[in-house]
Length: 319
Image (cartoon, rainbow, N blue to C red; front, side, top):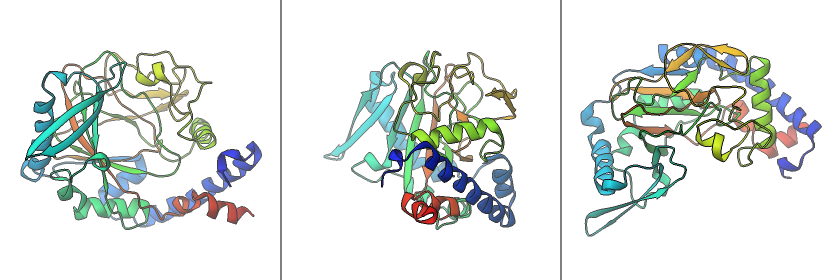
């Protein structure tokens, strides 16, 4: 049975059930938060750990990233997706441009015909795997990576949004120093758990509509990519958030009338930012500098709510 075909009352039953299951998970996480990083992640939905990786440990990744920039030459000026191939020991690179130009350039491990150089060093790191295992209550295998550049543009690539309803941990590894002018990601601290009416409203409309369907009923008018092209209901409307700020700062942010302390993801090469992408977060425009990062994620999720989100197990519980 396809969840999207359920009527509204049935979806409300599912949603309420998932929220109850999440309360169980929150208790289990708190009881097992045995480090400062885990405690911060539980409390705020985000935590930065300085100097996890040395430049030497990241050199293969950074060299690969530099090789792509060299390969693109004059085409390194538009957002889009990188395609790579190797022939006769030569790296061939091209950019599939996205317009309007939002300044976000990405290449994903799943789209590469070869193993991304240096990725295994990160994916096998015991500390990272421990944090993923704790948050997802699973083995924490890291199999997905997205290398990313943010280049200066007039349009923000990503306004305020939540990726999903269920917990989904990500880890940003900084491959270059990031300051306030280098398009740091913003995160609304403590927004990862559904604790107020606005968080519940956004979580429910995302839950109800899914991530593959554009939300046509939300106001889209700002200088950000979703404001122009539209996207799912996890992206806040321009009536609910300032999605295209001209100036970046460390001040609190207002989302849907709720005030949040803002975490600004600045740091140095080798720092790691753990964050749950079911909390509100936002990309930003670069003010003259290029941001270089790689984000890591794990598909393994055996937390109570992770299992519950399998539509079959949820359907069986309710019937």
